Length: 404
Image 1 (cartoon, helix red, strand yellow):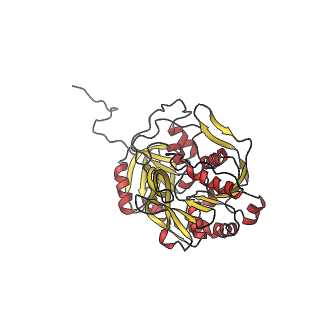
Image 2: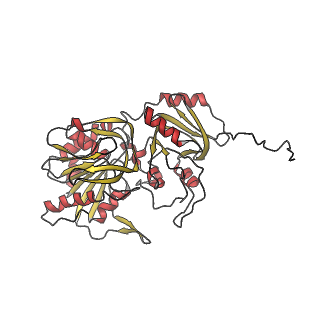
């Protein structure tokens, strides 16, 4: 019979939690900590993507959020310097917390430069593993996305009462303008083109058009796809005025994705968009840009119950009658019933019927709620970038590119 010494760990001992997720209603979820130490208050959402965790966590649209991954194994391909989406990694725009089912393993990929735990520490993302993410997902589906504090302390010592107070006191994302926190500090020109297997990213050398991208939290792959179609892309901060944008003589204007409440960002962004719409310059918006275009046209937005976050969402394009599988990341949505005459709904979610796209009748202006740059996710909606470029080409009397 085996004997136990005083220093032995008894087989019935439970592991001391080193991380907590404390919800605003007082629920305390215990797990194993990884990533950065400390704590962060944010909204908890769930993401159903099977791949692309690094792109997800660096998407500026996730600012102010803790991402729960429903796929159980996260981290097994490690991290690298190519699969990030925020323009300035030093600023660390993106999710502030992450929740995993399984413990993170050593990376197994030829592209891996570091393990996920090490990368999370460098990014300042607080994370925990070892919880039933299915149960947390059900909670979010039933009760909505909760405000919470995620905390990591290697010694397992927490002031739970203080964490509960912080979670309950946070006002949440409604009324919060986060675009100002993640936007570029100054204008810049983007030249990187899409990644090619075994070659990496390319560089644009001979642009044929000029697109000004208003950065509310733009993702790199959006800019790459525009550059790959021949656009010189000038990225400008979120608060750039219409006069300054028009002085750049753009052939097209892009309204980017971003985090927070569109109505809050719209306080300064909507008047600019309305001035830009007085011209005949083609306009294309994605995500937050879609929502603010709708606001500029007289529509309304509303907070969603659980939001849409994942890379497996079915959306129907009414302009073609086709269904595509897309990446999504939004907690607010355009109210389709609020759209005025002259604004047509072009895309709709087949999960819940919510609005996913609009166009201005008779004008070269359109936007979509989902992320057609597909980083991460399927490439079904890459055609939308060609649709935008074709509006520019049509205005210049040039033949259209094939959308697909």
